Image (cartoon, rainbow, N blue to C red; front, side, top):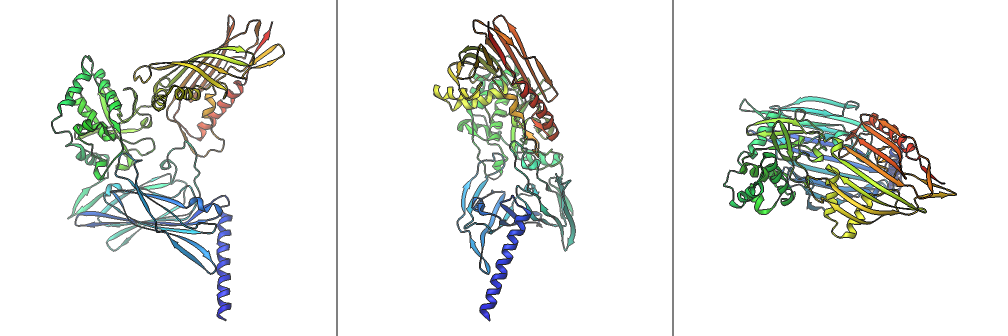
Length: 635
């Protein structure tokens, strides 16, 4: 009887496991994995006037097909402020009448230097063993959050489906919290608040959240996933209210307390001497600032390294000068001091990159920013100096802070300003090309001039191209014309690595098998550059798309008509004009040449779905017009 009972149990369990697998495969037919449960519990306590925060996370995942092993590797981040106190992970595989647990025993730790602003971020990685179709994994974590300003957001979605997502915050009644929701408008999130003894209990639950698709060049996950940012605004201590993170004013006071005592020591003579040499003969304040700013970019190597509050406190200018390296705060610190030595005033400035979508008024916590620069005011103009980069002209902010709010310090006071978006004509490519036809091949001479961010990006690439062959290979890719048989044979450069001047490259090239010869006629497409097609998006794209900066292109192609031939057909000039994108294709005959002019302005750094449709419509029209060819006929 016992044997029969065990056999029956085995059959029933196996059947239940198979039914479970079929259930989720039916619900999520295209998915590899589904999260059955995600539960976050945050305990916020008040002990002797100090806030302590404990955060636990539980995750249970179910794998629906044989690609499960591709999900075996996991990694988790932690730091001084987010101490990982406990980690347990296991794989569960069905075997006869039960799930057999295999615990993870090997956890590997390493430093993680991707985030250069906040803290000494570290990473622990591990591998789930024996993952296969029908496997489950469970992960339990416990974090100690050591600073109440760093209470992080919790998310109600991910790039995989989640069956049940629950967040519970248990907070002492004397701790006041504010919850800022983002992208939750069209979600079914239930919320409750209850009093339990001396605590307030806040609970959010969401069932059956769909998978969010990954798309290239989409805004960061903070701009897509539904989430809530919890903020501890204040707490009571002996009936006295202590304000913490309820306003931008409170955030700035804390920031200022961390920087008000830096650079008070006597400046080393060598730094004073350097500033004097760099500003010698400069007649205006702007010229002095440029000299100091460009030197800092070139000579203080950017290295991301942090520890505890060192992620917020700049190092002394003397130390940065002697070591010749530092992070964003250190670069700002030495530049601040150099301006001061020169009798000029810079202001330490906190700012978030475009990966962070929050305004300071929305989220007045360190979650609103991740970078530090220096601001400089001159004749009503604000300049945003980011010395962590190179080749950035004074008039240009770093491309990744365009349009962002800047929290500009000025002693105990502050100001919030919006960083401008650089217009397209300041990031330009101007190309003039002369073409000769020889049978099916063409040879040509080009001069390409680049400005702004386009120039800067090419300079970064050129730093790693030391040999002429490497440089030529890079130019073959960047200046590609016609087809992949484009080959630069020789080149000369002008204003290489210049901050102030545009960069120009003159080069000779050839393209084999580009021209069609049929009878007495030559057919040639004069549109050697397909830059417009690069901004076309997929029709079924779900999210906004982001670009690094606005751009402008001007291509002039002069085709020499071979002796004994005349132009029998030249396309009509066309224009496609809009606030977002403008394209002009024009043609003309001059003596024995045909001139094709292509002017393109991409006047956006972000496109929503409606704008993508509009741009796509323009691009399709341009692509059709660009298929027009010039016909040369033998006389």
